[in-house]
Length: 114
Length: 223
Image (cartoon, rainbow over all chains, first blue to last red; front, side):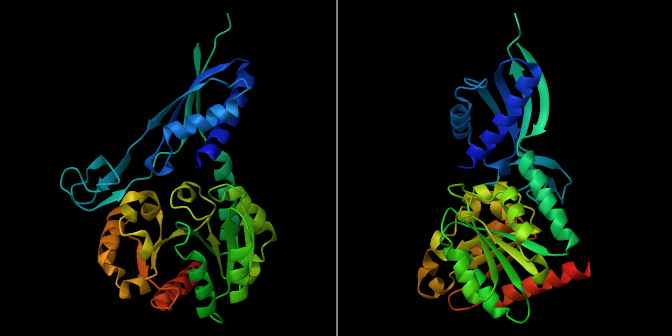
């Protein structure tokens, strides 16, 4: 549900960049961490609704979900894990969760002037 | 077509307000807790009972977040604490900007701790920092013991987990709710989480949670 606010913030950043570039944005690459709880379909749907009748209309969003990483205290390994099975992939030992990846707008693709 | 690298945090506008709130509260040495749970887990009942039990020991200020109505703020005021209501008008979580607006007029100097009761929702509020010192998760017996595994983000981030409505366990709900499973799953996600089983209705377990709160305020003041 909070994807609407994410979409609104995303739209504002892209629109500002589009004015700076004086070009029409075509697509954007976004990355997010596991705790951001971003659903691709919901975010794209909200973005489409907000972008309608603006320079951003019809843009495609590519969303990359970065896995959580843990640092094992027993074997010192840094590993990726799913929240549904939180344990060290090697020794199954006690570990600390490393900081989650932020919700980031990585790149925006713009139409070239012909 | 050409690509432009942006590398900007999408929620940076919210984060700037969260940082502003955090600095403001740190300067005043006030503990600020962000209470998050599903609707109906008993957040407001816990807060009202906490205010009553700590009368004379701790002055609590409450910021209430709801989609609409001032029902919750009125309940907290009736218990004897200062409370300000934020009506989000549909938003599923409180934003740092909304909290910032309230903090400007809140009698911060008159309270020892500010507890912000977020909009009832187990998912969205945990993704938005509002300037808190820590998050308090509330899970009630009626919701089921599988919630930490199904909605892990909040439990992984929270400082404290209050397992509420433990009076229901005594009435036979314990067959469906394994409190040890909740504790084990929460510790797996977050080894430092403090867990207090409470019943805000009967008062059972409330003194341990209240003592934690008093100690947390004392610790911040002496730091």
